[in-house]
Image (tube, rainbow, N blue to C red; front, top):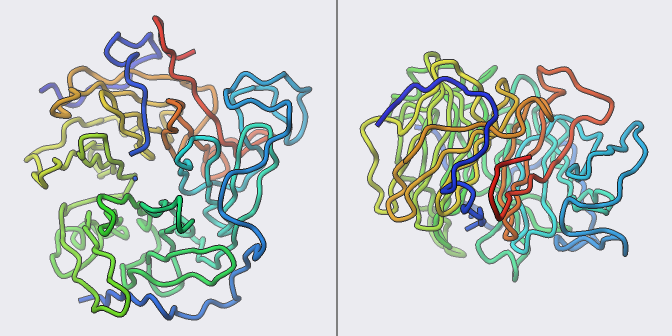
Length: 383
């Protein structure tokens, strides 16, 4: 397997990638307390009358990026692929099961907004977080039974630690997993459900590479965290991967492989954990030029990765039966939207990405934004 490929200019995708149709599939103290949560100061605000569900769109809106053009101006973007504008720097991004809308986090403010084409963003909740350095509201995941319970899970930074909390409309967050080390930097983390009762939690190394290799620390790890049964004891997390640097994202493909992005001092890496829990001895791909691997979305025959410094989406073709990488990465939408952070695939085959231009970039008047990218059904590549 060829490794260490340099970033390449945007090109047309090979036939294998064009057919991808990305579909969404989902000793420190660890606490799993379903009934109580650590007090927040100030108390988080929620829209008690709002359900965490589909947004109402205007009659003229469309579920595809092809909406009528609008005049440019502050917070009005003429690009029909842009779903939301004028956000603070974003954290996690996750689409709802039917692909009609997405939840996007503002890392520093702690706001969670639901966004959809042709609709105004709706603030679902605001969670007090410590947004200093690279901390804050870092990722979101939907409950595996979201259609019934409307629950969200979030990876956040507090003044004391990084942690996972559960969010229900009209209620305060409930702690799920606490005591993940925090530092001045290296706090980024990510979430992905691997089963109805198990959550994959990716943690950063808090700026301390030795902590990532320390089995007694939750820092710099991919953890499998069982959710406790109501009133039951807190199950112990399992370490799946160690040595994570700056955490990027974790995403799951249709056959159950987990894909993990992170950044080490020497290279950015894409790693795969097999559906059987097997871990390869080496990353499946590395980027010595360190373009800033961030969010990822995995489909049946490709993985799409948002790049911050690379200002593009990197697409890697994979074998539908094994998940093995079959071709070198190609770039899409390079330099069109600036620094990209979150990534999530909708059930309709569209890829949603969020920008982080207010975090180390050169923001324009409409940043930060959420964008939907069309995956063509026929010949050609990304526009």
